[in-house]
Every structure is written in structure tokens, then in C-alpha cells.
Image (tube, rainbow over the protein chains, first blue to last red):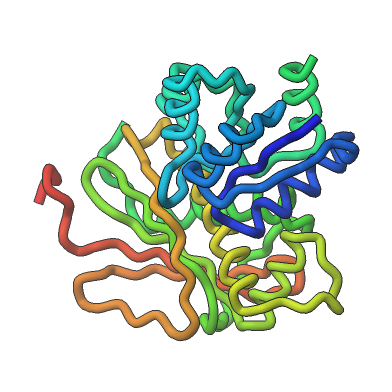
Length: 120
Length: 161
């Protein structure tokens, strides 16, 4: 299984990686992208099984990434891992095709519960 | 629901949010408030925008303190090397995370709170007369730190003047 982590913060990519391992996804191939634009190119070249993306990023943000994938009919599972989690954003994320929004700070348990449910 | 909070209310929200981040992401004991003089050599600001104003919330410490917070966030040991860039990125992320917690905590009190992107600063913060400032000293585990709230004295368009 391949999981893509999209975040402009190297620190946050490291934390998501570590949390994935703690949540039992250590055997997965984990690839990274710095922003939505970089992620989109990589996904079109080789789609992962799941995309975990930040919301606010330079170049192309997470919401724009989700919309771009939907416009291109790329059937990849996508969820947000973000600091921002208002009801309006949850709705926007859902409308753009996101399966979930995980808000920071998160735990390995919340990661496991969420990812297990979408990767069945 | 109100349109403007006092700086004291913003500071209380920031302390509550920082405590949540400290005890989860940073793995420290609950933060303690401190009345002593706290350092502001290195830290990050995050802008928060409500309907009628912009607030900057900052977390500052010494360079060593910022490095210690970075190591806590990333699960690193004291022997692990950190670049200035690593510290800037991680402290910016800490501020970003607790800004998100503040956003959710203030949801019932303000119509909306939007987050900007964190900006890391090496050195003293020198606000002008156009900014009101309120500080709150805290201990995050063994790290002395300071929360700094800055509010523009000029309200955003649509404010009540």
C-alpha cells in the first residue's frame, strides 16, 4: 500500500510519518510532496492508495488539490490532516471529495481509527 | 456571539490551546503560567482574522528553548542535530497547531476565525504604536516561553471604528 503525505512543513511530514508507523502502517510505502502542485503531478504519474494532505499550502492548497483530482476523474482516496477544522471547512472538504478531516493535534489512535475505516 | 474579544480573552484562549498542544503533540506536563520575565529571542507568530480585526498570536523562547520544543514535537533526542530551518519550521508548526485549537475553541464566541500562515522570527519583537500587545509567561515542561498577543489598533474594514 502506498500513502502520500502532502505538507509544506517538513516537521509535519515527519510527524505524520511517525504517527502512521505508530498507527500500524509502518509497512506501507510512504511518499511525500511539499504542496498540492507537486502532489498532483506525482499522483497523475503513479496514484497512491491514500493521500493525506494539509489544507493551507503555497503553490496549490489541499482543497485545490482535491478539486483538481476530482476534475480529472482520478479515483484516489484523500483526507485532510490540518490545523483548521471549522464546520464550513469540513463541508468544503467533503464537497471536494475528501473522505475525512483529521484535525491537529492528533494521536495514533485517531489516525488508526480513521484510516482503517477508509482503507477497508 | 460577539464581534470582538478583549486581548485578555484571546490570551486565555491561547493558553488553553497551547496547553492542549503541549500535553499531546509535545508530550509535556500541563503548562504552568509564570509571572517572571520570559525570553523572546526566537519564536513564531500566526495571524488570526475575525470579522473585524486581526490578531497575531506568538510563541517565543530562547534559541535553546525553541530547539527543545522542536525536539519534543519531532520526538528527537538531545543529541540530534537541528538546523535553524528545522527550528523555524517546527515552532511555526506548533503555533499553527495551537492556532487551530484556538479557532475551534472560539467558534462559539466569534462568528469566524481564519488562520494565516506562521512566520518565524529570530530576535525581539518591536511593535509600533499601531499595535496593542499583551504577554503571558508560561513554562512548557522545562522550557521558559512567552505567548505574545498583538492586535492592530486600526480595525479592519467593516469594523465598528
